[in-house]
View (cartoon, rainbow, N blue to C red):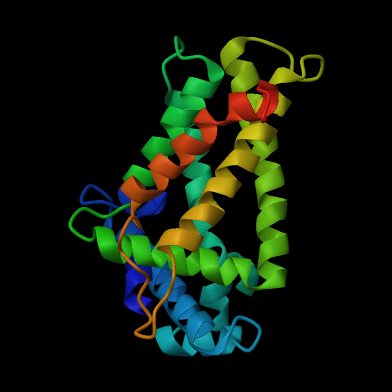
Length: 236
């Protein structure tokens, strides 16, 4: 189960590719090993019972090395989700200017999910994502930190949308409203995805059916398609 976490692509994975220097590749490998060890321990014995000392012992590095990569235990637990949020901002900035704000957000989200699945390792990548979501949702401390991070992400998304459209977010409410609504819809879709495709069995593996990016994205698209009717249509 723990090996799956090293098979979920991150922005740093792409930066530390063949063209990267030896030093950068070694740093990325150490970060990946700490991340995999931490999440293995979290899933085996719980987040609260896991210490930084235990994580560093698995990788055979010092606490000082750990704190070069992560500020605390909470940050390592949320690292993959935080990396994905950073990816979304990067992809949103790069979307074509002719797309309207909602189109750009939808396209950036698709790019984010598809870019983070390692080719040839789709089931393992999906299981990793599902196990992370289950861990966060079932751990109040992590869930609170994750929701705080999502609130910060909304502000970044609003700023990027305002910049794309050439408007002032201080006086124009649309960027903040769209970022907030999109975030709520995405979270609703994520929770449905984990509930329907993310049941973790006795063998510790998540159900691979509809578990990958191609499983989550149709759920998100369905939620977004229902947004207009939910807001404006007569429900009776």
